[in-house]
Image (cartoon, rainbow, N blue to C red; front, top):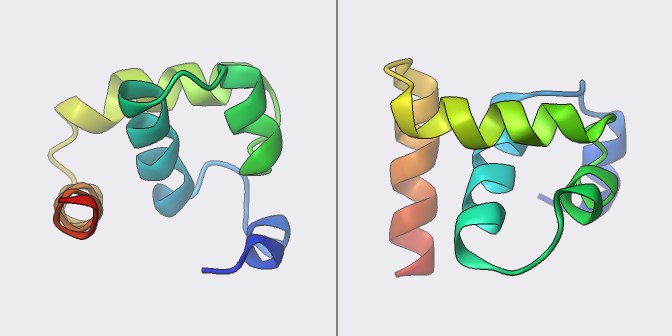
Length: 73
C-alpha cells in the first residue's frame, strides 16, 4: 500500500493496526510517530492496536499478522 492510501483509509483499519503493532514491537519509533505516519488519529489508537493485535483471534487480523511476519522474515 502506498502512503497516500493511508489518508483515505478509515482510522483503525486492520491493516493499520497490524502495522502499528509491528512497528512498535520491532523499532524504536514513538507511538506519536506511528499515529501520524499511519494516519491513525490519536496515539491511543496505536496503544490499543499494540495490545489487541497479538491477542486477536479475528481471522483477518491473524492473516494480516502472519502475512506481515512472512514479508519481514
